[in-house]
Amino acid sequence: MKLQSLVLAAATALTMTSAFAVPAGTWSIAAGAHYVDPKSDNGTLDNGLSVDVDGDIQPTISGEYFIANNVGVELLAALPFHHDFDLNSADGTQVLTGKTQHLPPTLSVQYHFDNDMMPMNVKPFVGVGVNYTTFFKERISNGADLEFDDSVGVAGHVGLDIPFAPTESFRIDARYMDINTDASLNGDDIGEVDISPWVYGVAFVKQF
Image: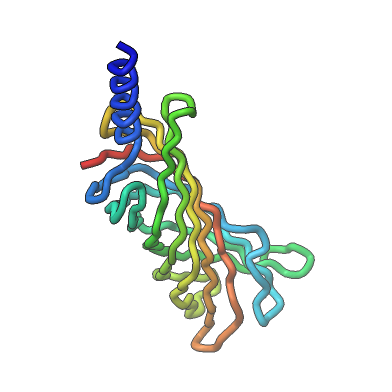
């Protein structure tokens, strides 16, 4: 009986371990929304005006393919984010206002931890990758021709998956994106705008 009990316990442990691992070859899709929260102090242009960029929230979707157990490669996409910004004088007086839109596709390699000791079998994960941000529809209130160059930078990712079914979970996450763009006005370089936001999101995740 003791031997049978040990065999049964070992089999149960192995079953539990495999249940918490995400096996290689798995796909997951996450659909939700993210808020882009730019850093404060977004730079000072060559004309002495400081830049203050507002945040925005948009629907997002990501796909992740697990190249090894618990190790996935994820691509994040979104609808265009819309940002208002102010150009202020040294004393904080608003001089000009503007708008821009951007798309920030982000490719990350992620590790999903097994942790059956956490409440509700919550699975934390971390990731690191690269962000490519392209800007378009730049406008400024004085009617000048404003352009922001595309940006490439590092991206970090942390989050929690909270399962409510064998292949479905609720996700909360946060990303840091290094977004720094060169600005030009009427074809002349006028300095850099450093957005570098934290991006906070929620999503529904489905594994296949």
